[in-house]
Image (tube, rainbow, N blue to C red; front, side):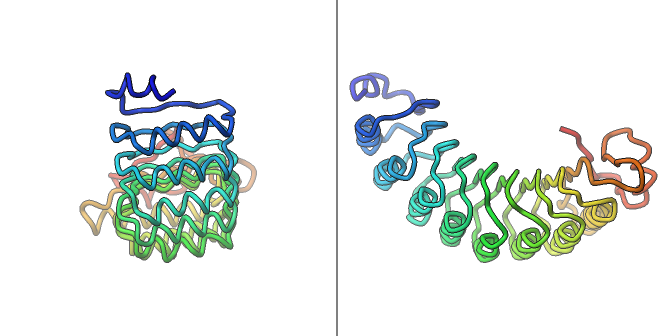
Length: 282
C-alpha cells in the first residue's frame, strides 16, 4: 500500500469504500496519510471502521493540514465515534467538507459535533443525513450556529426531529448569519415547527435553500413559510430563497402538493406567492 500511494503521489484523492478493514490495514493506511501532504480528499464510505478505526484516522489527520474533504458515510461510528470526530473539528484543521451520513449518531455525539463548531473556522459542509439525532441534542445547535461563521450547508434529512426540535433549529437560524442551505426532509416538525421556522426567517436573510419536504407541516404551515419568504424577498434584495415543501399533509379529503402547474395548491396560496419564489419538485 505504501509503495502504490507514493508511486501515484500526483493523485489528490484516496477512495476506499465498501470494505471491511482489518485493524492492521487501518493502522498502515492512516500512518501513510499522516505524512502525505498531497492528499485533499479521503473517501472511506461504508468501511464499518467503528470508533476504534476512526480514532486511528483522526489521530493521523491531526498532523495533516491538507485534507479538505472527508467522507465517513456508513462507518458504524455511533455516538462514541462522533465524539472522536468532534475532536478533529475542535482542533480546527483545514477540513472543509465532512460526511457523517448513516452513522447512528443520536445524542452525545451530535452535541460534541455542535460544540466543536462554535470555534471552527474552516468547515463549510456537514452531512448528518440518516442518523438519529433527537430533540434533546438539538439545543446545542443554537449556540453553535449563533457563533459559527463558516458553515454554509447543514444536511439533517431523516433524523428524529419533531416540532420541539424544529423550535431549537428556528432559534439557531434566528441567530445565524452564514448558513445558506438547510435540509430537514423526512421529519415530523408539523405545523408548529413550520411556524417556528417561519418566524426565524424574518430575522434571517442569509438562508438560500430550505428543504422541509415530508414533514407534515399542513397547509397553514406552508402558507406561513411562503408568506415569510415573500416578505424577505420584498424587503431584502438578496434574500431570495428556494423553498422545498412537497407534500404538506392532508386537507379535508385530498392531499395537497406544491408542484409546478398544480392549480389546486395555487388556489390556496396564490395571494402569498411572490414573483421570485421558486417552487421545486425533486
